[in-house]
Amino acid sequence: MREDFRRYLDGESPEGIAQDLTARSIPTAKGKPWPPENVRHVLSSLWPASGSTGA
Image (cartoon, rainbow, N blue to C red; front, side, top):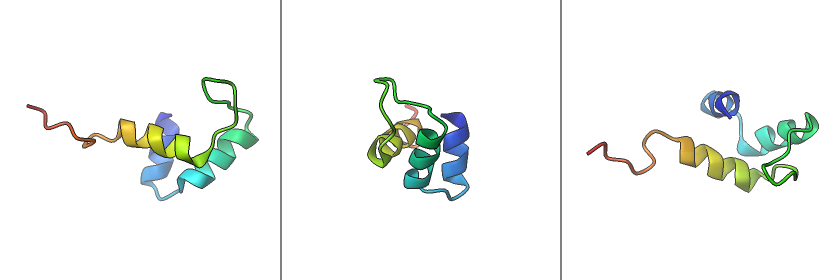
């Protein structure tokens, strides 16, 4: 997902990333195609400021 996170930061949409993962036959952990909502969820959980205050 690091590559996908970088692509998202570079402006690519979760929809585009999901389509690319599916086209490259890279399934989710459950072996299914990537819906954009799952890409959005994973990207938001990787976001450095996702609610952590660092305290």
